[in-house]
Length: 469
Image (tube, rainbow, N blue to C red; front, side, top):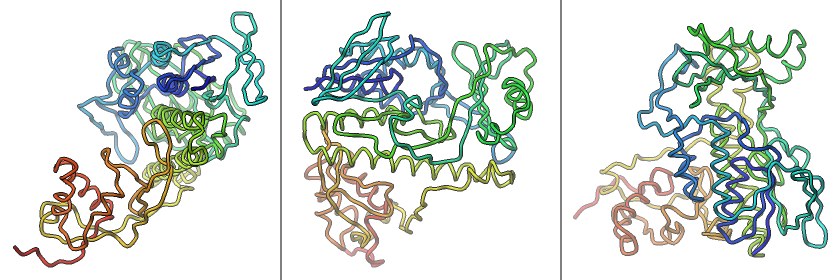
């Protein structure tokens, strides 16, 4: 196993460090700022907790007292409405506490943590990274076989990036008061969109997402006065008479981008150092953790000198596809608001750079289709060797590519997909196919995979002739 240095202690850095420690590596994490430190990105999508199960951090987050999201007040493409989720799978968190919980879990797994600490110099020489760190007023030298960059947007200049959407600036400020909103609010304005987040500590974060270039070209007023003018055009503070600013107005870059060469044989970018989604997706933390978990498997493969080229290709491709997929979704969501708002702000955001693929027509996988419809494999199905995650390593595996899929798929429900497809006999019913597979898996699992193949358009109807006998 190798020695690994991680730069940055946010969700991506902590998760990557924790996973690498689980895989048996000697890991040191360097964080510039003392914890807890404030961060925006306080609304966590439902997919975050399942991802944190991998490193064992989910339990501490679940019991931290963060607020579940059960309803959101939406003013976007029509009159205000409540979007309800009684299950409350999303969470509203204080990022300082949330990030500290993930860092603590990494420490429990054996990660050495230096914070606050500053990297004075780093270079790669004779097969090893040499990192000079200043901590507690003293310099120390670290040596590592592998370097992970999890510094987020602060890593600009270290990696080549491609912007994937219009330049966007987020202005935000926290408020205190006795009658602050209890639910998140999202709203489309004339030249901006707004997001209000009530936090567990009783504060309320108001954010305005605007065009960075237009804002930079106008110098009228201070940052605070300009932000207040924007809020006056929204309903984030409507009906709240006792709200008082709990801190200064701040501004950060929120432009989406993707790193085009995010991994080398001895280093990797994870989290927002690798990929920044459009903030409308509200899944930046989830994607950061996903990239950290995938990046750890890639790094483990590189350190073991196994399928290095495949591992690097897999990681670059996964980021590129995620960027395109989220970019297309964001453009579609902006387009719904742009119908009634014809300003340049909305026109730019409704124009997707991602190629949209129209899904082929297919028959619904209902009970009648399962038992009475004869099927065959789609002529558009392609099987090819592609790099995939297999346990703790990236390996080359036969995978399925099809226009109905967002990306090639090698495994489904823990089952290798290509061997199953190889057993499909043209003219069989979906139920007959599932019964054939049931010798190696439960019938319920086999039926689920057959339904997925039908819904994806990989299994297509061969004949309308009903089955006899």
